[in-house]
Length: 133
Image 1: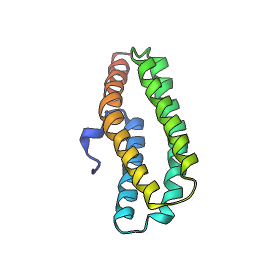
Image 2 (image 1 turned 60 degrees about the vertical axis):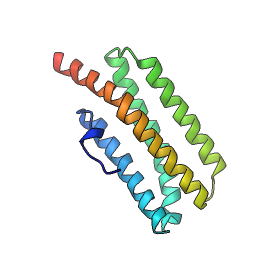
Image 3 (image 1 turned 30 degrees about the horizontal axis):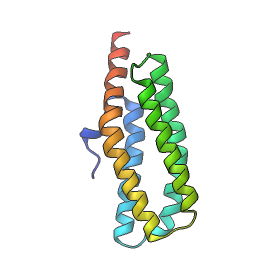
Image 4 (image 1 turned 90 degrees about the horizontal axis):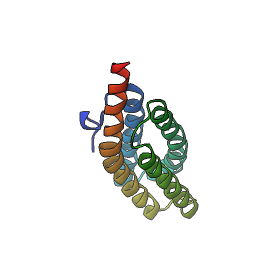
């Protein structure tokens, strides 16, 4: 899954942060295929913990600022992913091939379901509000 325009929302900060996530996803996938993921695993899980806190807070601030109609549903998905990530980190404190495989699946699911669906809608809404104002 290479970063391309299908992941872009048109909102610069959102696209930049999504690209960081997608780039890391590509790195961990590549590391898994050449067996070098052991050192990248703790970085990836740490990055994700930081990323979700910062990125989700920023999206939620924009949703509040512009009275986004799907705020409740979008925020619910954020909270569910944070809960899932916390459970993952608790279960996989140490590196294992199974943990990396599980992490790759979870990241890909999030990228495909949330960025390509929910964040696309949010991005379009933000752009409409900013261009109207």
